[in-house]
Structures are given as C-alpha cells and as structure tokens.
Image (cartoon, rainbow, N blue to C red; front, side, top):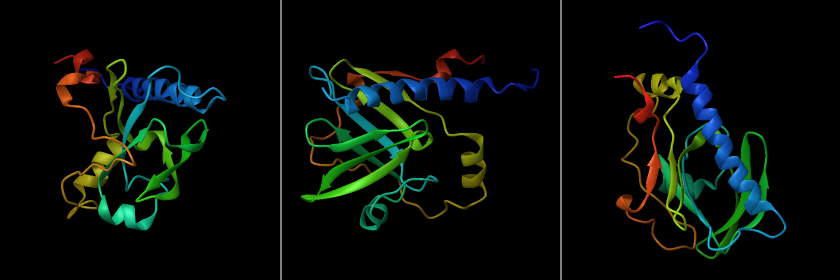
Length: 164
C-alpha cells in the first residue's frame, strides 16, 4: 500500500470534529439546545489543553464523560476547544476541553454518535510508557443520568471505511 502523504485519516477526524463543534455552537446559541437534544461527551483527561479541577483529574485519570443537557452555563465554543461550567458535587466548575481530546460524542435524543481514533502522536506517547500506570477508563457524569447502553446508538467509526 502506498504511503498516505496527505494524511486522509487525520483530515477525516478533523472533519468529524467539526460536526461536534457545530453541535456545540448550536447549544451555545441564545436559544440553547433545540427540542430534546443533549450531548454525552467523553474526553481524555490527560490530553494537552484539558483544564479540569485537579480532584476530577485524580478521580478520572484517563477518560471522563460529561453531559450537556439542562444544567450547564457559559458555553463558549472556539475553533479548537470549548469551555463550559458544570456542577460537580453541587459546585460549579469551569472546564475546557480541546476538540482533539474528545473520544466519543453522543446525542441520545436522535441516537447519533461519533467515536474518534487516537492520533498517532498519542499512540506513540502511550506506547513509550508515558501513560503507564493509568487505570482503565472510568466515566463521570456531571449532575446527569448514566450514559445510555452501547447498543442504543449509531456510532460512526472510521474503521468501517478503511481498506482491510
């Protein structure tokens, strides 16, 4: 197989992340989320640019899931990240999540989901042992119900489009 000098896989990942950005921009609009739309967003807590309180990073050292539904404030969406205030244990906490840190995005109201691949730089860092000792992923939900069952969604994975 020829070397991909253009980087189509990264281009596809970035294009799919723009879908997440557009959905977040809709939520950040003055009218907020339309209808029953709400988002489950899973992200790598150790990814560069993630800003969360240290007690959350200690509790969820690998991945964390947040929910944007009824109780979120001051959502700001930028080209490469978003910032929002959520309540954790009743206390409002600002968090910042780069779009590249997101591993899964799910809107259960329409059973739409995206799952993102790790970039090769992340895989190389993990293979070098920089992430050694981190426990298996655990999910947190900020003042919301648990995430829906995996069988309830239509997750788009890039693996379906790759040549074997």
